[in-house]
Length: 405
Picture 1 (cartoon, rainbow, N blue to C red):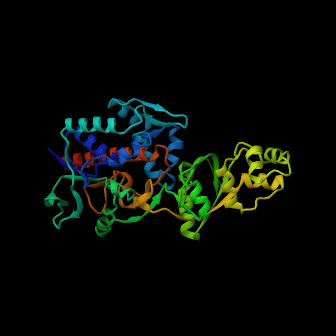
Picture 2 (cartoon, helix red, strand yellow):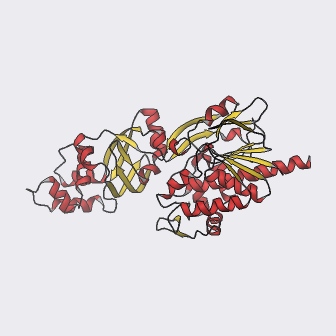
Picture 3 (cartoon, rainbow, N blue to C red):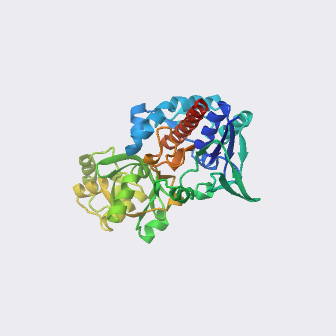
């Protein structure tokens, strides 16, 4: 029986293991952590957003410059296939109001338990606490374990070690140095879908840390995003921020800062706001004026002061304009270990169409190890699952070719 090692027990690795085991391979899954699927369980705390229901052409466009390579892989294992797979594990799904797809349980643990039971039924073996440290001179895989060094000589390997965000859950990014030393081009690992630094005043930070900005619109450059953001002690994070994070991160890397504009009332035209503000009594305080005429919360009013200065304009037109465009200066991005996902990784030029490393024949790469990024909303997990399927199919195609030869 053909032996295949899958290194990394996250969504991409486990999906590769399933495809390989179903094809009759002897699969062994290695992971450095004591248990598998830890980042998947963490994703379950937010409801486990598996994928998105939008049209496939719009879906694959979310991967930006990586779309030409990732697009065909997602099309080969599209959202409908992922939904059918989850439901085959006894986890029915539903589409939320935003188009995102979730299991009805809104948890990852039932799905993971059913998945592991299926894998074990297919004969997959698991080796926890096996930290991959590279290859021996003869090509054997090398692992650090509590009992000492271990080795393995499979017929093929799938690397699915994740990025470098949330390292305490298992993804440390240590594999990058191993692959670079093996002649594999790896783009620097950077935070994706992370928060940003804002120099809040001490008063604002202490009073409003942890409070959400709801129903706002954020603009950077020519891109405008509706959604929510969260004030943190260090700055700003949340879904709408994450949607702009790649462009904001790159701007900060180039210019040392980025200016993000917040529209606190995106559904109300400036002229309408101006008219309401003009009707307020002249002797009314700015805070009361904003609260009664524009229905701003204390957080929103004080955010205006952070953006425009303590003394807000009294002129209704200028004040309406301030509400429609509050500029925040972002000075940095939060550390990679705090980001939701990772940008950078194994360059697509380093792999063939089957996701095999050209520098290491027989070694395939899947998941966040590859150089791609996407916004939150189901795109991250979908691409991880799809590349896991693609890498496994690549292994099977290679093994079939070796047999025929």
